[in-house]
Image (cartoon, rainbow over all chains, first blue to last red; front, side):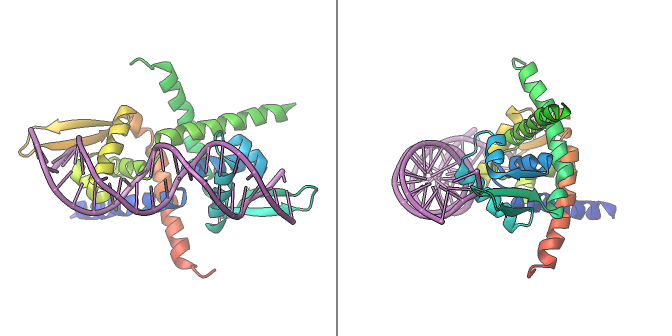
Length: 119
Length: 119
DNA sequence: CGGGATCCATACGGATACTG
DNA sequence: CAGTATCCGTATGGATCCCG
């Protein structure tokens, strides 16, 4: 009976989505990743500026988690004063498709909510 | 200078990602959507079962938000006792690509974290 | 500049009980 | 079955100050 296998497959997919969201949890991670992603390399204060509304405390915390999960690397540059550069790992780059899709969807979504508000 | 335009484009994309995440906020929405998505139609208690860990209170709250944002529709079936069916709207279906990508990524991710834990 | 430490409000979210 | 209401702990996250 193929129906049973289809259900098992669905369970797997739903779990996989859950796994993914586990790493990308919180309000900010995806936005942070997209900032780094679009610029390839990005400094702390730049990301702070890109991601509207985030505080430095949150950014610091989220970046640390992303680093632990091997999605970004952190490089301290020997400048005066210190500069820190964040970069997506190869693994982090595998999220690029998702980020692009989200960006596309977000652009469409904005059209919809600003366009036909009263509907 | 094309660099300036590229930067403006990046800002737009980052904002778009932010917009998208605004609708998909919270711990559960994506998982809920994927449950409904994979089954096309899905009942409250089924989703409750699919999405591991969610409470009925949260599920109810999240579904309501998704309905407000026109991502899902809610249909009360005239059964005994009452059955409620959730379905993705056409608009909600536009998230299917993202959900599939997340599922794919989640499957890869699980391999990585279970495979080379000690690295 | 890139954070860490502390303080504090409130949003999130679980457990339980209740209802139509 | 599909929620709602209440209670309550915890996590989230802002503001501010501090440091190398």
